Length: 425
Image (tube, rainbow, N blue to C red):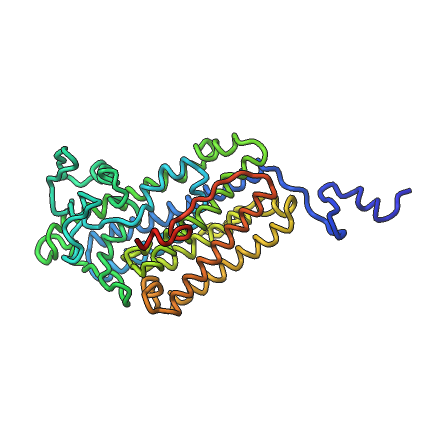
């Protein structure tokens, strides 16, 4: 006859004894984790599509009746659309098909003179960008390289051809930030209070039009918003049952299926967010290095990047209509295989989110992100630096987990973190 505790243990098929007598669940199968991850990706991108369609409808209403009120509604819809997309960014870097499309959706920074009129302080030329002040809205005939382009009709084909024209990344003609610029205009306030202040009359047809070419400006805004919806639908389709990203991940065997997940979490946190989107602007105290620079919504975009990473780690996401998508996660796998490292990393995710919440609270309270990174703003600088430090620590926590698991990843770096002297030269 077995003793009581031995009999109890024999009946537990899902657990194992670990040091100290505690129970730890068996590690979920990597293929099941990959399925959860893919399901969450599909749900997140689906929400991004839904919120972009809501934006599209508000833009249509604004263009039909361009008033201060309808412009305000369209701007709010743009801000409301950002969280759904930002939460998806943890799927970048580890999934090639996602990165192949990302440049059509969320590329930044953009040289806005490519699109429309700008303040004279912007300048007319750039050593790095021959199309710095192309202003396609004002010019129905343009030249790209040696090729003359008929831009009389502003349509999807034209805008897609302008995106990264001349292989210059700052030539962003489509995506969220092109829409943002067309709704807000340039933010000419530097690191002082205030966002872009484009007048609704920039879209009035006929008498009352400001800054000329209101018909072409309206056409651009209508086309670029429609195109944003289509490009997000393409990203959502990557994660469908036969989608390219889902299928590619499902083909990976064993722990190799976890590498894209950890790669995304590490690279977004370190090189992209902590480095290029945050530390660079803080080093230079430069509002031009602000992600949502026209709307002053940057602190929210950073916050929801961090929310999304935590959701991917935990394998649980609540959609905008309240449905919970969850399942086996990399967190559960790490807890089973590398419990000490997993516990530390989980605490680091919590700490990063808390620091980001403090930054968001300050932003909601009226201190815009470009003010936070302004020279001499010790309080704002510290809020941003605290998030940077937390993201760096979180990345090191990811590296410690994958080292213990034997999963191979490469985390994207950033001169702003790794070689700051180069940035200031």
